[in-house]
Image 1 (spheres, rainbow, N blue to C red):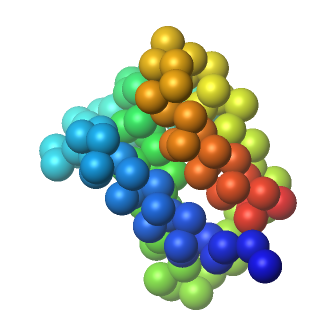
Image 2 (image 1 turned 135 degrees about the vertical axis):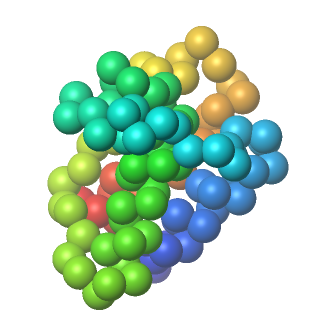
Length: 103
């Protein structure tokens, strides 16, 4: 049986916290208002993942609202984090699990 979306979100957060990638200060309001895909013009992938994607998914779950289906975030994660190499293998695998859960 596959993991629930909430469990995957918790695992991503725990991994980012363990690796010192979880941020305590949100990006600026201007950065958060970006309409570019992945807010590519205003924040890096990990900021977008934490402050936009994970936060929105949790808010939808908490509100009992439908989740977006068909997300394909893993390919962008692989590209955005490729310079990090093996250090982000587990994170990318979790993002891929999240993509599959939202398929």
